[in-house]
Image (tube, rainbow, N blue to C red):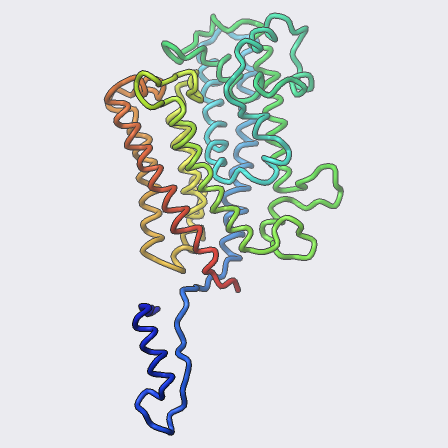
Length: 387
């Protein structure tokens, strides 16, 4: 248990000490020790778990689902079966899950290798996309990698697989042209290559141009070692992780939701809704915060619970640790509740009075969580006595 002194009480203690306390000539004046508010926590196990069982596990899952997406699109080349298109749509959504959850730790190779814009640029340039469909001599992965990011990646595939998303998200297989199918397969191959590159960067080498470069996972787990030029200490790793959580909470609340939501019904703008073609927006937003929960709780989907940021916070303040966990869960539930009883996609919910009320509730919960992470969790870094 830690005790604190008020300024008045502390002044009184110092004053009494200075004059010998009881007045005895034999008493030796002492300077009182004021307990600090620092705490101890051994972070090695937590960092190892978050690196291997959350981050690396998530990127390995993404790479596997990238491979599955490529196979699903290849099945569309010579088929008139609606089931094959539905399967490809499902494969797209499946790949979306680990990517969106991974946005809670969007640092390292995903940034330095420009994987993020390659895979997830938004908004989609539908005009240039149509130009490519009409004029490109052919579609192959290496050629597409040289094109602008806004005509490749998740959202280009989404548009081709699901349609424009205005009235529904159920494209018919008969609407999928030969050119669209060829483009899809090439896009999926590019996607597969980038997700594999990201997975390799964490597990094999974070810099393919440097034969001595370590896997990025080893840089996190080996923070503070002599040859680690990125993370000078475990404190730097924890700061990276906490700031990653804050960053995506801010982006969901103040960007992904707020931008299309607008200040009023009159200023709502559905063109700004990410994943609008598939009507997958709310699932994306929820997965973003599930990713925050993964880092906080120390577990990737379906994995055993091990140490996460919650253990770091609990070492300082158990009540705070529980409160943050509850706030994260509350945000996820409130985002999922935006659809209401009539299962509205986000692009329609922001045009509906009751839907907008539910959106505002979710935004308020996101704001509360962001404040807690910034004001209560981040300051713990300066109070931690690293071992």
